[in-house]
Length: 187
Image (cartoon, rainbow, N blue to C red; front, top):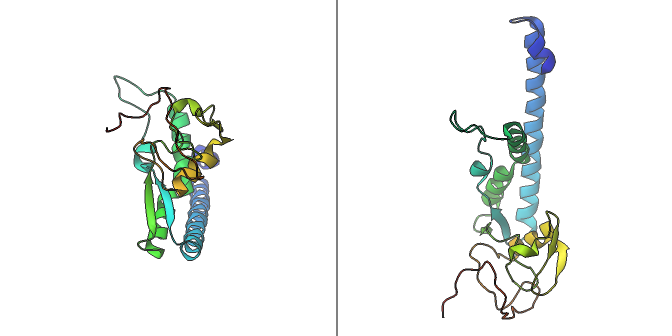
């Protein structure tokens, strides 16, 4: 791309350079589609119910450039993140799995899936020690944060923060006097 961009205007070098880039991008797209097809077929054949975290990809990949009055910050970093998100093909995988396993695909609301303890069901923002570490402030359960969130999605636990009487690992949510980020509970 750099070589083609620096080539003289309307030259054969520029045309050839951009056609090579187009071929590489097409191969990348074909690989992504092939992977989505194979993975969605495997999911549809292997599992009775397939759950996906319901992510708003369009909002996640929105531009950070801002306006003339208030220009955005770290626009190049956000553009790179957007490219990386879109290159994964999350939406295509969800769509093709839905086509191949009709009625067996569920969307789990994304809020609180990474804050909920998969062992006891307690939701606390302080349980997320870092990007990779999850330590429950209620029961002391420790694991990788992504593994904990994936367990919650697989169990269909997400969305509205409510206490669960039984947890994914068979435990119960104990009543404690400490505050949490949960909404008020009905009497």
